[in-house]
Amino acid sequence: TTNTIAEGEVLQLLNCNDADTTEERYITVIHYKTAKLFEAASQLGAVISGSSPELEQALVKYGMHLGTAFQLVDDMLDYSAPAEEIGKNAGDDLAEGKPTLPLIYAMHNGTAEQASIVRQAIEQGSLEDIDRIREVIETTDAIAYTAETARKEASMAKAALERVPDSPYKQALITLADFSVNRTY
Picture (cartoon, rainbow, N blue to C red):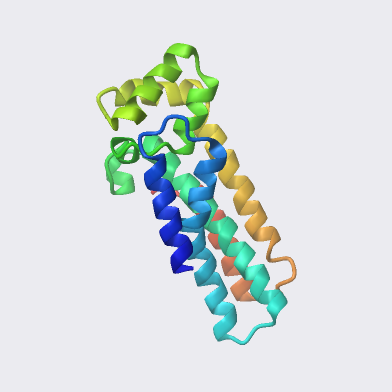
């Protein structure tokens, strides 16, 4: 797990200021970093409780999808929520040159001019045009796309729990998956 997370960090560094980062490469970074932490936490509960290998794998899958959904929403909130609500400044990822799904989607679905604005901001790690970038993200429906992608991941997380016996704990995991995509901070 530690090696995978370290590899994810290296991949993220390689993607920094790279406006050609694909959605697939972006999702791979999430899987290697945030999702891996959620996966390990979910698996740990199964291991500590002495669960069957099948239940353990169900929880591993749950954690991977939950972590992916959580990170997608985090990246979406970077452009859609007020700084005081999310506890960080809008565009922090952009300032670090991190191409996240809202930016990647906006570049591929906007006009040539819009794509150029986003591309330049990623390559320079600049917040100089943050208002224009937010406008591009809004007009290309990048927030809606990212939210839908997160909802799909949360649904897959919940589907991974199908073989988990009904209990208050299972219900808590389902509630957590729903919360992860409905949160505003």
